[in-house]
View 1 (spheres, rainbow, N blue to C red):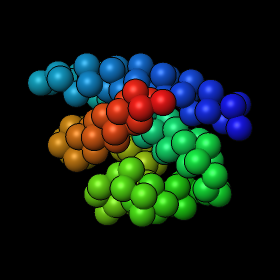
View 2 (cartoon, helix red, strand yellow):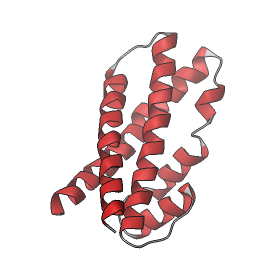
View 3 (cartoon, rainbow, N blue to C red):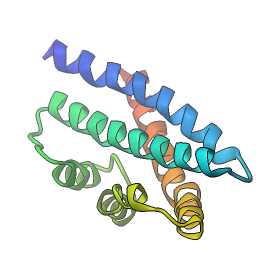
Amino acid sequence: MQNQDVRWKLRFESLEQAFSRLESACAQKEYNELELAGLVQTYKFTFELCWKTLKDLLTFESYEVNSPRETIKRAFELSLIDDVDCWFNALENRNLPSHIYDEQTAHRAANWIKTEFEPMLRECITMLHKRTEKE
């Protein structure tokens, strides 16, 4: 059980670092093409780390979850996350930005990341941080 405890906490440390980069990227007012691609990739990486950190925490707490969808559902049931619809939306659209070729769609994706998903991830990371302080 101790390995699982260490695993979720180590992954959480990586998540905090990734989220810090996402915050920096979201703080920009304007983006060139390369910066826009960087924002999208940073978001995708951070989202993946976040759901996997939740999965590791749930496993540590003796819940069996095998997929991102199961992880999100169980995390919501246990009040680890609040807006399950936003999480499922993020999950369903996590590969959408990979297929963006026109600038207008790319800017819509950036806005979506900044207004919907960065706050969602921030809330989860805040909760996880509080969780690490309890232990």
